[in-house]
Length: 327
Image (cartoon, rainbow, N blue to C red; front, side, top):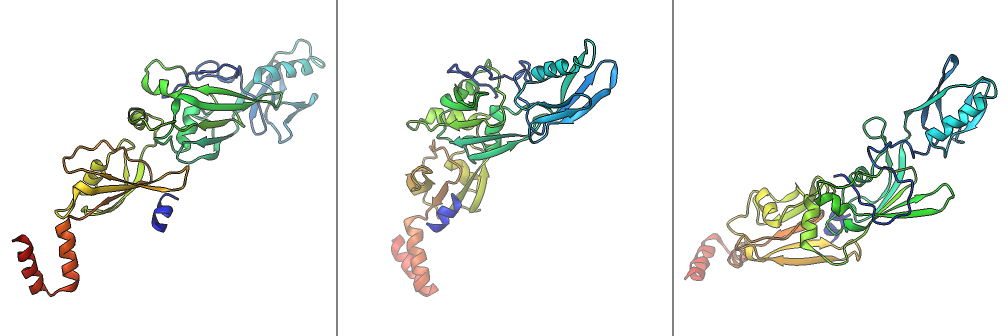
């Protein structure tokens, strides 16, 4: 049991609940709603005045400093809003200044992912593709993907607004997983939280669909012991069955009792280990493995008897007993 406890130690969302008005989708001017913060690099230029062209990193206090203009609070503003603030400040010393601002490099985004994912907890996500905000789908992938108990129809995105109040939106990732015409992915902001809820009751069809989707992990780890030719820990595709795990372990030995195969699974909510028996003698297997499962392939009854004999009797007497059993 100690071993067991140690062993267990696309793209698109449907907004199902309104209320997060500043949610941005991929392809829909993604930086329009982006809130600047410490660590962002800004490229600032004033037409005709090279001395004001500069690259600025937003300081930990949220400000930038420009010659002849002074300190300006940049954190919490969108790029468009900050550009207008800069134009107004330069207008005090220049006539009708033309100010341009672009983001040179985005800061990493700190978020929290909890619920039915493989590795819940805080994440620091670097910009995707060089200079694009990470998305909900990307964040779930970085958390190891969802497990088979996830309810993708009710993923919750929580965001702290400019007023300091949290706002929630429910995302239906299941629609994206089964539809080619799913809506665009949602961009994340620094401080966002994602929660992937648990299915109210096991549903084999839903769980099989999850295992085939891009929201599942690329591979799951299971252990297989007993009467297989290559026992040990295995990495398998997320939609693997017990029969597939046995096949990828070199197949069962001649001593295997395929009618009494068992697997042990840790319930992460209760902390208890659940043991289930499966009859694979007719090779009919619909069991969907999960990350951390332990598969046990036992010996046949006759093999167990012979092993017991082998541990206690001489080789000659073993042969005599075996003949008696066969007769």
